[in-house]
Image (cartoon, rainbow, N blue to C red; front, side, top):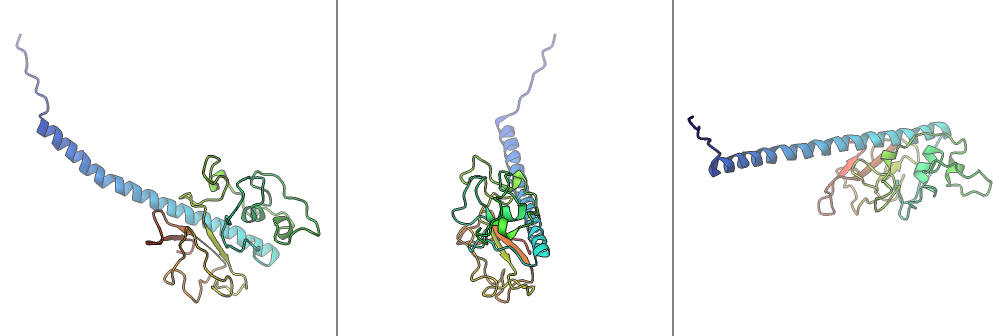
Length: 217
């Protein structure tokens, strides 16, 4: 019986295959990462538009926008992680606490900024989902987040109802998110024609290279 000689790969052939795989990986993985980033940007804008619609619903019902924290942040500094604690942005729009419990009863001596005073009819303008919050194991649990896990999210409303959100008339200064504020190219001095605006840091952005995800772009 004639034994056939079995030929294996040579070292050079193996190295060539590995090199080809490496080149393909270098081409494919960045495009996957870019596609994921674009998808999360789109998801964040959808999320912002839903929140904006909820604030517009509040205005339609009560004739004015709710008074939020003076920081103009969705999660203001020192926001309690306890879901049973007050969260002004969430509680006003959801008409309940983050844990699903009812808001305290309205009383004449209640702080005028509290949710039960501002949303006296207890109308649910938005149903927040679990995906809107950081998980219980996160460094800052139970806070509202965007698709990139940012919890520093700016929210601006047209306080004087003139159809333009403008520094000086509707707010003192643009709020910083992760130490960054938009420049005049993104937020012109004459303002932005809108009723509600949101923005958050883009992934990988820092003070030396500021970049944002805007609700209006």
